[in-house]
Length: 241
Image: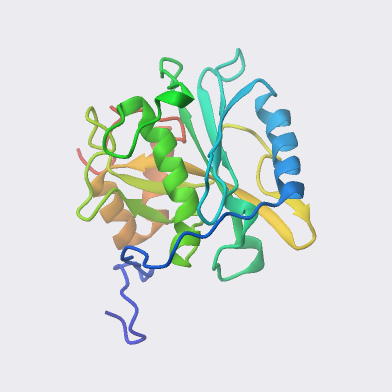
């Protein structure tokens, strides 16, 4: 524990732990201008032919997940949230207050039908990416915190694998690299800039390295093995020989 009373990793970054929230359900608010601009932005970079997983009843923020299928230019699925940026996060700077999160999945992923979505802990592995995007998008509003570049969120404490066929067990948030210049950030208006963050699942040892040396210690190894937001459940663990 540091002198300021904040738990910190060896790199000096703060570590936050959260208890289950005690307050009551709060009906979500929306930002129609932001939604319109974000959807136009996604049309430009992902195309307009997308499936959208809509929430029927939303607590705090209305989180939808847009699913863009593989194309000749991008041989993978792209899943991206809208709604996380409707409300500001408790971030240290104005240009860090608003974000949306995405992940890319291989072309053999099977998008579940919306009516098939089940409660956490009961869905199959194909549902897991949608559930994790929705969890991370709502998390900063639920706990009065923020998510940004280089932040890690373990899947439990201690962390457990995201799915049954991998040992990836923690979420690392980085800047997307598969969509070219101009994808992030997106300026909605003078007082609102939305940052798109990529969800990169990582191994426990990789999270430990990041906590010890900061994200700067991990990124050169990712560059060496071309690790991006495109999910590979069997990829190399860069912290093992």
